[in-house]
Image (cartoon, rainbow, N blue to C red; front, side, top):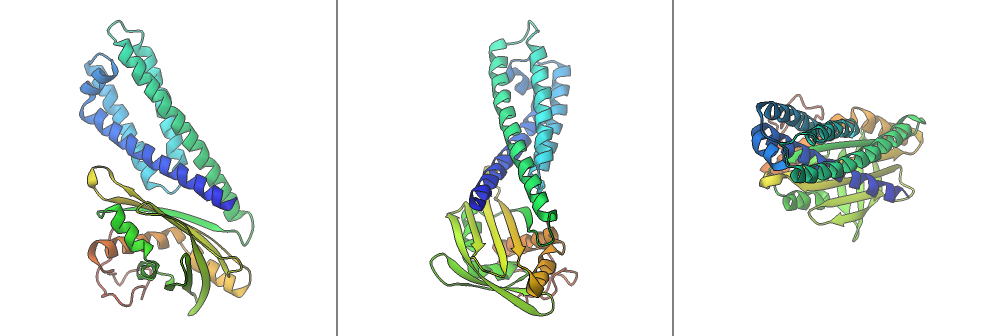
Length: 312
């Protein structure tokens, strides 16, 4: 059941990313060429129409950036739904004009209706996912924590996938990991550092491996930490690199070890993951990870020279 839910969440997040890029692309077209776009959808090009489309374009760009940059983009998806309703209302009013190409306008309206349906579906799924995650994070003392972050690197998806797929590379950019050893075809042994100079170990299994697209893993039954995660690699349009999206989900067991693990992961988890992704990007693009004295992870990468920290 948990695996199916993660798969559904992953599909919803991929759809949200797609809608985000679509929103940015449409917005840029509306801002840059409102006259041509108006002609394309069958609305007579007037100065008022061009001004209106530019405003709509800025709205689309803002929505797209919000969807792509937020870990919980459901609110921005619902914003897109509201924008879709406004677009449909504008198109409905345009049908009353004698100077409108109704065939083109009808086709454009059908397309907007289709996108609206996708926006509603995706917003509903992400809202349910956020609600479940919120209940899980606050419903009981030993509840799990889920963190999601994205970053863009200028390398191709196959390069990003290749670096991550070699599990022994993970400690090079994941600050809490001391080592990861491959023990079998899909099995690996993980060692993590916890507060107090101690370590915790667990065995994990790779549960999904889609070359150049997605990797998912989870700890084996009986581990001190119930840990799962996934990383997705999505090509940015026009060959501008790769959008890397990481989701980490964990639930420590009880006792002193569990408390230490909880302290480790729940201390600004989003900031930790953000720092790790910046380190991943540095390693991928330059072959090494550098850090500043102000890094929140002192000694994070002792094998690397100290320098400046990468910026997002």
